[in-house]
Length: 243
Ligand code: NAD
Image 1 (cartoon, protein in one colour):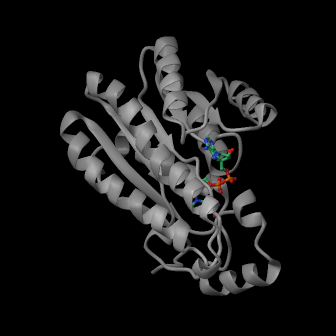
Image 2: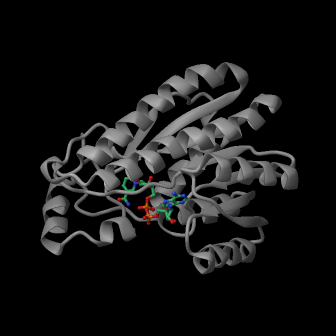
């Protein structure tokens, strides 16, 4: 049995990862911030696939809540093999109109949340000298889009976090990998105006946004033994947008 924690797994990319990893045979911990019903529905789907798991409500930007969650998961399953750091927010706005609360919340969740989770889970993996940490970044971490100064700065931070943490943990049997999606059909991109979407479709060589399952396939591969020599890199999945 292998155990995976996926943050922000009640919907979107996190949900797709939870379902894919359940299919791969993982016991999945579905972390979420607000909707008990949505998280429970994901767990029901996980169980329908024949896998085990639990839901756990915790704000990843709150270190005490992260500590409690990781402790309880470890006490329940006695191991954590995979962390998918996925919970994130995008508060797009031009810098000249920047709202300080959006900036603070973005850094708290997209950056500090990844640190807190990786540290607490990393301590458990370190004991076993094995594990994989996958940080969901964004193409915006290396490809600039106006209106995303906050978001892209947080994702660029995640990219360097992945590289540096890999050098700290890989010698101890823990791989650290990043995934940088382009535009994916989720609630995060649903809010884009139609004309903006059309503009992006033109800029993307594959002329479409991706489905969450396509990102989950990459996560599944990177988590597997097939990817045993991959660490310290962030792999882009963006339909060619940033090529
Ligand atoms: P989403 O908004 O659909 O889902 C985000 C999930 O994170 C939700 O379940 C939400 O409840 C949870 N969450 C938010 N704050 C949290 C917190 N403090 N603690 C715990 N959970 C919290 O987003 P998504 O599109 O599925 O994005 C998931 C990840 O993928 C994010 O890191 C995002 O930056 C990244 N990403 C998304 C896209 C895209 O086009 N959708 C593109 C590139 C990268």
